[in-house]
Image (cartoon, rainbow, N blue to C red; front, side, top):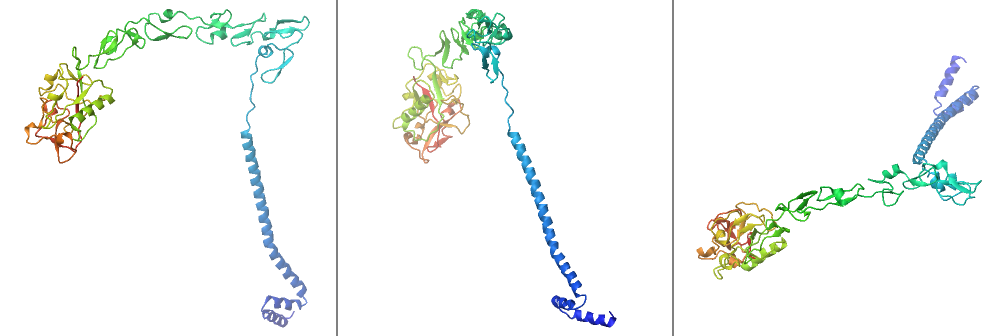
Length: 442
């Protein structure tokens, strides 16, 4: 094609504008057919390319799903194999035990067939089998030494007899024929006296392993040791268990014996004294109500006897320990742990105690400081404390819990007169809660 015609063709093609017009122009040329075919194939190839990519992607996804399924199958297989239990084992009984009283073929405890001999003899005893030729039961040599009972084994003569080794392993002192029956595994104990020997208290074991109580102690037993039994810390007789006597007991001929009661007219014993574990306002319901508080505290604590509160009333009734206590004891006053605070009533009211009253009815120690008070309205000589004043300081005869009213108190933990009387230095409001001193009367 000459240059002029080529330029004209190029100009026509560039003026086509759109792809469709370009195709129509090309088909009009002699080369239009082949060129259009080429363009069509190019377009078809371009359209196929995404399809091939999609097919490739689908194949990759399929392979991945196949691999995942295979792995999952393997895991399931492993899990199933883990769940499989090992084949249980069975320990078969001896032939002698399996064939005892049986003949022919018998299944043992594990389900295995065992030949128990001919049945021509009937049923042979354990350790024997049937001789089919003679029709007699004869010793079974193949089971000699096998277990035929709890402590027995088969013997060469066809008997089932006690085995010394097995029998000895069943317990202390066990032997064949050692009990009451010959040929049977057992043990005959020695006498209790032989088993105990010099031991006279507690228990021991005989050679058969049986527990034996040892006797012969005239005092008391502390475990397996016999003590004299006359001390207050180890008291008892006739082999009884040793015990420690309380402060209000003494070790006597029968063991710990209670001391005579407080207020006993012939031989009075010590009188118990304690401070209450509970605190109360000034409304005590008079001195009689205070006595009831002491009595209730003693009863709940398991203390014997009758108790009154160390408390005085107002001038209207003029009651005080000096004139209202049922017992001005000639015997000592003791705390519950046995500590003496006074030798008798005269010693109690001499304005000095031997020890502070700081043990409550349960036996617990009450911490002693200046903030622990007890209602008293009582001087150290046992008389009413507020008679030194124009007005009574006893919470309106112990019927008031008003913070505007006052009552006289003592300091717990003191041994001089301040244990009951700290006037004029300290008085207490009737709305405050204070403890009570309690004295046994009988």
